[in-house]
Image (cartoon, rainbow, N blue to C red):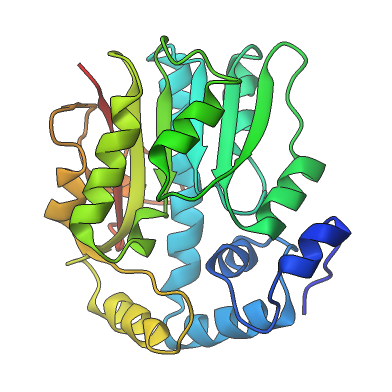
Length: 272
């Protein structure tokens, strides 16, 4: 069992139901983090027992996030990031990757999990040249998110919207597309959308394991066909190589062996 090294603020801890596994804490556990509870570890172990590849998916998703942020900073010149559904802090968070190349980068994290927000405020510190802030809001409140983000970001300037592993929690596909559309509507031309999410059509073993997890009563996560993930980028200019399995998106020299497709797809698109 992991050692839970960091403790949330008492007020936040009172709001956390540790009798039910939470996806953010399970994901943190798979990434090797310590901000989770025994109920999350048990759920994570049960899932990995049924489908060991889930750990690879979690870590590949994180590696993709690092690469895409580096590309946005180093190649596209982005200096502002809106990371919605950020999850629990772990190694190489968005602001750390961005500010490593551009110390002046400004990042807003958004989540409405009290444990996530408590740990984020305690652990995520900006460079002195840039800024990092945290918004307590639901994914279902795009206009509220944009209004709060504008206190830290200049939304008249290009901004990267990051939705990493979050849209699968929105069961209604049309609603998920509407959320993306409304968030992008508040960002100017030259902004970017960066998505990676669980996908159907690559690994049936993963699909069965996820369906079984959803049937346990935990907060469900819905895998989507690749064409539906691609449709989130409608009207945007896709950055090469387009929407692909995340290990295949601009793999770097640190990858071990030849990258292989997994049930997690994503990409980056520019708002004209």
